[in-house]
Structures are given as structure tokens and as C-alpha cells.
Amino acid sequence: MSAIALHDTPAVADPVLYSFRRCPYAMRARLALAVSGTRCDLREVNLSAKPESMLYASPKGTVPVLVLPDGTVLDESLDIMRWALAGRDPEGWLARDDAGLISLNDGPFKRDLDRTKYPERHGSDPLVHRARGLEFLRALDDRLQGACQLCGAERGLADAAIVPFVRQFAAIDRDWFDQQPLPHLKVWLAGHLDSDLFAAIMVRVKPWSSGDLPVAFPFEAGPTAG
Image (cartoon, rainbow, N blue to C red; front, side, top):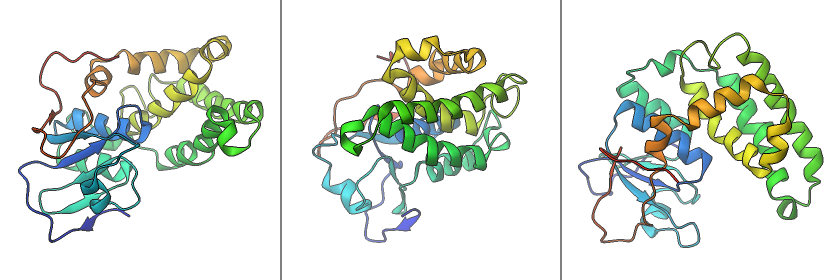
């Protein structure tokens, strides 16, 4: 459910972003908001005690959720990315998009990622799904042979949309990942994770509670990732 108008939602000075630091969908939304310089009131969500205000805005209860000052709700990460970049796109990310590649990431690869990381939850064979996920990583590695990024020489929307999921997959078993012959993908992944932009979106903040003072995002100074 995206771009829903909540006409009885009080107007706010800045958009309100409900996020969870380690969620890859929330990461990619924050990447686009940060690179575009779109100021938000960041509300870090405790997933075991989701705020009523977030559930009112988006009853499906997943992050990210962006509530705009006019009450419009964006609760799909790609919608948030494209909305932010439509307002300001200093690096030209929208010109380096690939909807088909992102769809493969969000569909088959995400399915294999979940069934590799949480086999008990899905009743799956993690080795089967790890092998399938590796096929997607090999395709990315092949694509990166001819360019530094997925859609050319510079980072763009496709890179920001996919890198959080590759990061999560690699972290399931880092020793195994490090042994895979994926030289171009590893350089690409490390470059994004070591960037100032990624550090800036991974700053730790305490979970939000009603009545807390606003937390301005993007952070203006001194980010430290952990």
C-alpha cells in the first residue's frame, strides 16, 4: 500500500520516517533520502513493539514508512527512494536504475536469502537456497566486470537498492562468502559499505517512543557506524 492520503493526519514540518537500522529495505530508503539531502524526522522502530502511529499510517506493519507533511504515506522502499530522488538527485541516481534487476533482487534472491538465513522459520534447506542465491551474486559479478557499478561508472539507484541485500546475504556465513570467486562483486560491496554515505545511514539511535524529541535525518555531523 503506497502513496495513501491520510487526510486527518496532522501536518508536520518534515516527513516522518519509521525505520529499522538493520532492515535492508529501510537501508535503501535511507540511502536515497541521505544522498538527496531530504530532511526527515527519523523514528527508529522496535519491531517487537511497533508504534501505534506507524501502524495507523501503514497497517501492514513493515518498515520503512514515510509520512509526508500533507499526510500522504509511502510504505514501499522503492517508492520512498524514487520520491526523494525526484525532489533532488545530485548524483543522478535515477538515470542509473534497472527495474528488472531490482525485481530479481526483491523476488527470487530475497526468497533465497530468507531461506538461507532463517531455515527453521521456512522449513527450508539452507544449502539449496544458498546455492541459488550464489547464482544471482555470480550474475552481478559478471555485470560488474565491465563497470564499477551496476549501471555504469558511478553509483546509482540500482546499486543502493541491491547492496543492502547482498550485505545481508554475505553476513550469513562470512567465511563461506569470502571463499567464493566473486572478485568484482566483493570490491563493489566493500566500496559501498566503506563509503561515508553508508556510514551516515547506519548511525545507531534509540527506539522511538511517543513524546521523544525529533531526531533529524540525515545526520549533520560525526556519524559512526557499528
